[in-house]
Amino acid sequence: MPEKKAAVKQQEKKKSVIYLGPTIPGKLITATVFNNGLTAQAEEVVKEVPAVNALLVETCKAALVRAELKRPGSPASLCYARIAGYVEEGGKKE
Image (cartoon, rainbow, N blue to C red; front, side, top):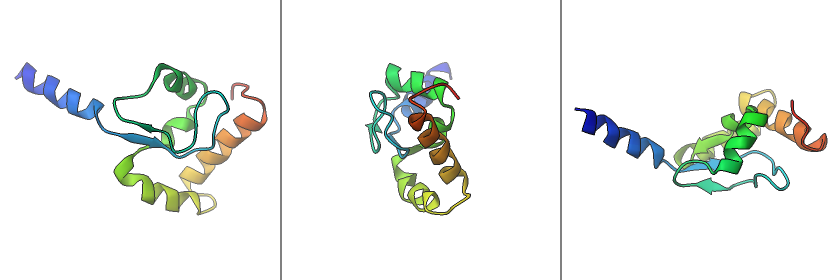
């Protein structure tokens, strides 16, 4: 049984995610795809700006989130705005 749980965790780690937020200069670029989990630098950005996590979506859901980004007031567009504010402030913590 423990082997089965380990195999499931391995599969979960291998899901590809794409970042749909604005580019954070020197840290994270829009439309970057992560195939085997996030890089250490991306993990750091998520810690600094938790809204980034909401815009790291499975590639199969990217079209839905992109559509949501176009709707003012949607959760995705609010996260995008928060990240954009972080970038405008020069990367100062929220």
